Figure: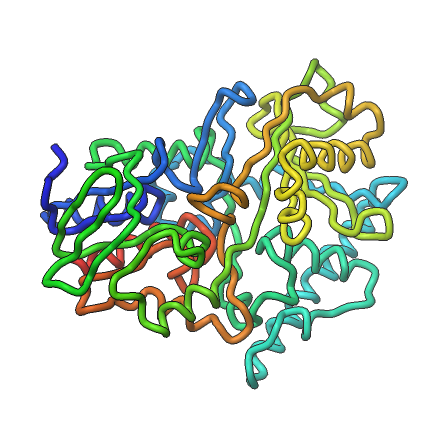
Length: 413
């Protein structure tokens, strides 16, 4: 039964909100989770109707699995890095094994140069200011690490934050989807869906939350909505948030990584084995290419990503424009065979969804510390923020959201 006057009100039933609610209940505290959407999971959302098998619209991998708090809940998830090979299209042919090894060496050198620059001290600056350029693979690597990994270009990303939040493997790909894992962990929690919080007053002995659901009072509140919603004023805070908190929100903007899935039309698998990935090298004909993963778990669909400025531009044009661009990208590698092999398509809409307004955060130059500022309790713990934006190590991931939600729950309890 959902308590009418809980000790803690949690806003948002994504990873951070679910983690907070689980921790609060384990500590013997009453809570309620208010979720604006008609479903739970936030940006960790898996569904099967679109492609006939579990398809993650958002979070896809459990990164750095040895330290990932969700690893115990997906014990059978394979390490994607051990079962895939990467294919690189050079405009008229696939890269040779020697060229792929050369590209890997360039990738290692690129990251080492960025790490040396960060370790050298001095004021924080954009990653692009210190990144190698001019080498054969540098533009491709910069595009991959920027738009395709961090959902924003390297000229917009803090060097300090980039290095401190850089993750490694193992990268697990759960068969049920990351959203499936998260949904399972929400079972039995006091969650109200379709309950959008429009206003939050925090100047009294407790907090008061208002929305179409009515009025809810609690001792404290944990806010886990995205920074996109916070920056857009999606919740009216009374009194207004402190200047430092507002600056932290705007210093950690949302990037966009749009995900596209295609289901196979027949038996043609385009000559690519399950789990393998393919993408085009950056060049005159491919300034902002997509990246693709084929036939995960030997299923009959593939998925891909487009990120950064191009993703935002396509999102404004609509899902049909994104699908057209995705098909064009695949056609550049596989020709008309791609059109014949691929049928149903699904395009995610994180950039235009008013409940998210982006995929995950990056820090502007000089704003890595904003993650700590945003996670600091206000009014003696009466108001707390949690989510991937608040974690200084696993920012941008479900692991960061989960750990941040647990930390906020400890403070609230």
